[in-house]
Length: 148
Image (cartoon, rainbow, N blue to C red; front, side):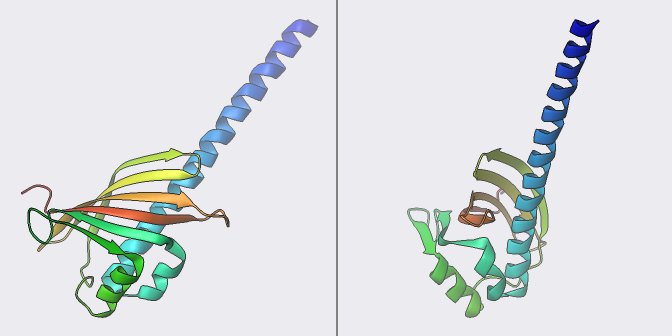
């Protein structure tokens, strides 16, 4: 009987540990989705102050085959914010869909589809957890009009 009680106690402990890790994963997924949503909202509103907490200091945007098919544009955090302030980018409202989300400890990859009537983009976001335990976007790889 004692052996059966010990086995049951072990099973309960294992089940509880598994539930806790799932809950932690769900919490991280929600935190990451919130960062992506804030990024899209900040761009729509051209609210560069919103970027302060969600963009890593080494943030880069990468757009392959832009501005011409033989080029790749790499834009720094400062350059991205400058373009936003100049109203050269941003200001578009997008419907955002998360196509894929993968978390490995303190790093994450999110593939999102941003859809608007005049322009759609598939964006691969790379996120890192900073020293304050907050998720930040460190890279944004954009494919313009992915279905064309």
